[in-house]
Image (tube, rainbow, N blue to C red; front, side, top):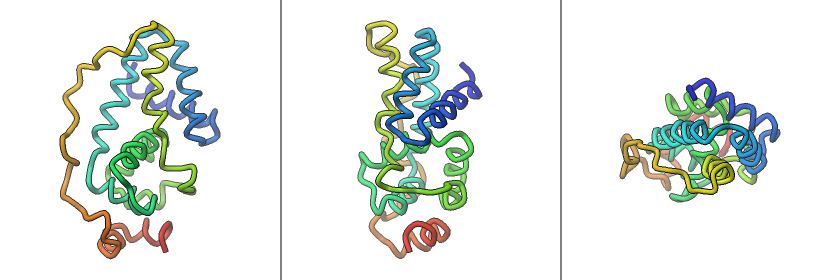
Length: 172
């Protein structure tokens, strides 16, 4: 599975779910379950590598702005959600998290920003196909600490200064 096919699966599942993260995870499991196990493992590699790339202080801080705070778990689920938004949003957020202010049509923290189930979709599909757990993906271990420079997630003034567009749109 190449990168384009990965993003097509993400986009197709999001459209089928009308943007609902839980329904997107179900749609993704359904789509992956119709493929061979090796394709599901490839998908998992793509997902996990993007999940690890998104483990960065600036993105965590942007999540804290959107979610009005972001614990470790909340940031994990946010990264899954961010991948689920598709290539343009994901890559744009990695390039400049403040750009999420323009990339997101809307953001309802009661529904958006949490897609824990999306992170397990490949595992669930693989188990449905094979009856076994997902094998190791052969990727480098995830970073032990977030990438980039530390940002105080509780310093509203610093967050507003670092992410002016995001702050203006979603926190004022």
